[in-house]
Image (tube, rainbow, N blue to C red):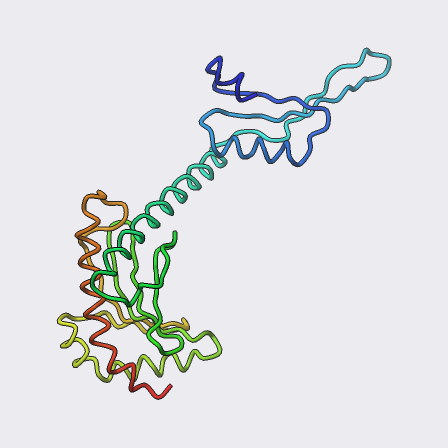
Length: 228
């Protein structure tokens, strides 16, 4: 079907079967999500009214639509973003090994953050990459059953906010959202993100790495003193 479609440059293809199976439906659905052409799966049955000769009854099982195409485009977009993130993290982790061992044992992934433990359960130092911005953070999350502990840790650290920010060299964003179990202290950089020109990535990564080194240095003494 695909070979024929390609050979004649058609924009639509119709597959007629007597017994549409789940694998047929899945294949046509996937093709509609993955291709610019329109694919249709039609079931054919022979019917007769009274003494009339048998005639074909065609029933549409799967067709193309704007909604399906949008799903396909979203999947392609997500797949592309995952690849960008993985490449970005691979480069950042390699560059960071030259300056700090904090994330030395962390592998690159497809997600928007990578994190390394602080040595205290539920507290991690994380890099965050968005499409056009980046962040570093101290993330606090011991789970729903210790929601109050998360807040206690945050409040304890916030008491030393002035000293921490002085050691870091800049102001930080202190986030303790109501109704959420996690808290975070972060710094955002507007230099760029993973969707920006890859030639800019080294500079973006160096700013993040430098920030992470300062963040760890600023928080490490206070984390060690936590009673939790």
